[in-house]
Structure formats: C-alpha cells, structure tokens
Image 1 (cartoon, rainbow, N blue to C red):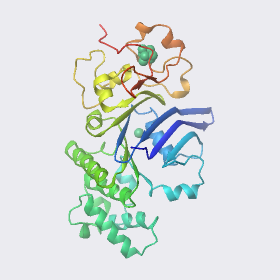
Image 2 (cartoon, protein in one colour):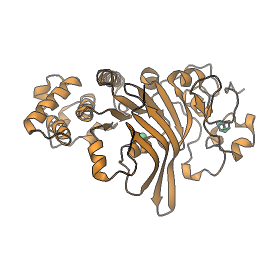
Image 3 (cartoon, rainbow, N blue to C red):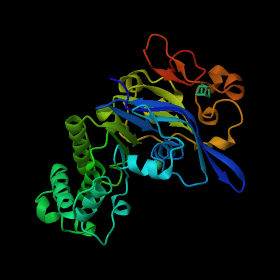
Image 4 (tube, helix red, strand yellow):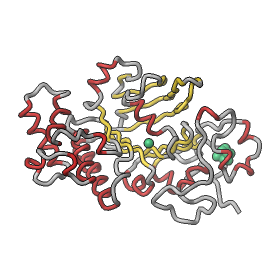
Length: 331
Ligand code: SF4
Ligand code: MG
C-alpha cells in the first residue's frame, strides 16, 4: 500500500548555550495504512525526538530539517495553527505516561469529549456521547457511568485505555505510540497491544510504535527501524530483524551478541557501554566503541561512517555497517 506517512532525511538539532546539539542525524521511514512500523533503540537514540518532530511538538530551540509528508502534505515548517489542525486529528500520539497525559481535575469523559471538540464543532452533549462511545470501544466497562469518573479512580491499564480513546476520538490516520505499555504489567501490556491491533484493523490506522520491548515488536510490527545515536543502524521487515539481523547493534539488542545461537530475549539486553550523543561522533561508526565485530573490519570502522546499504538479495533490508557478511559468533 502507499504510505500515509513518509519521513525523509529527518534531522533535529537543539540550539544550546554550548552550541548546536544534534539529536537526529538523517533518518527515513514510511508507514502505510493498517501497517505498523516499530522504531527501536536505547534511550537517547533519538526515537522519541523523531516522533515529537513528526508531531511538531519539539521546543522552540529545536531545528527540524528534512521532510515529513502526511498523505503527501509537508508538515515541516507549517504554521503553529495549521499544525494544531492536524495534530490530534489526522495524526495522534500516545505516551507511555498516561497520568501526565490526563488532567486530574476533570472526568475522563469530559477530557475525551474536549479532545473531540477541538476538531469538531459540536455541542458538549454530542461530544460527551462520542466520548462514551470511544471509552466503550477501548474496553472501559460500563463506559456511560465510568465516563464521569476521574483519572485517579482508574487503574494504570484503564488509564492507558482512556488515553488511547482520547487519541482515537478523531479517527486519526496515523497513531504514534511512544512506549505505550512500558509502565504496565505484562498481562495489561498484552491487552493494550491487542487493543491497538483491533483498532488498527477496524480503522486502517497506520501505527508507529516506539518500543524497546522486542517481544512486542516481534508480535505486532511489519517493519522495524533500529536507531543508534540519532541514525538508522538497520531497517527492514520484522523477519529481517529477527532472522537476518545484519548490524552488530541489532544483534546486541536481540541478546544475540556474542552468541547468536541464544534465542532472543523479550527485553533489550545490556550491551556494555552506553550510546554516544550524536554530537560527539566525529568520524567512523557511532557503534564502534561498543562493537564486538570492529576488529574484523579494522580502521574503516574508525575512519569512515557506514551508510545504510541494501543487503544483497534481501529486498528492502538495509544495514549501516562495514561488515560485508552477516555477523557471526565472535569467538
Ligand atoms: Fe561494528 Fe564496524 Fe559495523 Fe560499526 S561498522 S557496527 S564498528 S563492524
Ligand atoms: Mg523515549
């Protein structure tokens, strides 16, 4: 299918007193209606900054370059009021932290209704009816009554359902979910992911899922973008990542480094060291200081920045690594 959201060469730099600090250094992705793209990486990899850039939600010291096309329409550089018409309407965002997304002083039904009224010229009564309908759809039991309750009267999982109802109330074509289940226990996580999958099927929503939970990614994603230090390390289908991972960082995330015969774990495993900030990378591969494979390649890892390169015979699978062959077990 044709993508509904296309991001080309997205770059984000923050102006600080110490000079410009790059956070995202040229990434590309696209997602089609009804499909799920997962963006994966450690914290500080630029995945949340990228989604905030797509939503036009970065602070004013952020400079965004590149293209963000929503159904062919350029969002970068749009005036604030134009963006407000799109945000929450055509493209919506669900955060990890449901509590901070909700106002403690208003009933959840009121809040969902107001999200609707932001983009629809209807009475409060009509909007509240729409809110109850959405709360019911996301699985809030006895929605007509519970709509009058306040956020603190809900469990974490139920609150996240409310936030999802708020995000979906205007039928967005693209939903960006930034670690939507991280704060929840495993059973509730599975329920919320199932809810997102159901919604996606019913409305044909394109989903961008930002996650560090590879178990979730394996279950729901069609395509995966692995980010490291503000750049793409690897890009491909979910099968490419789980069966043909080509970047040592991806292998590390899969818990497969240095031994790839160990099955992937649910959570990202700890790779020794931490990611550099994109601004501190001078030349060479950003992953080099942590890479178990760099000795096989040699100087090139230090002197030459690897670009995303197609994997021969593997369709659209790409990796940014100088290793020609698929990495194998390091003895
Ligand atoms: Fe490792 Fe070199 Fe590949 Fe970077 S380019 S991931 S340092 S092997
Ligand atoms: Mg984040």
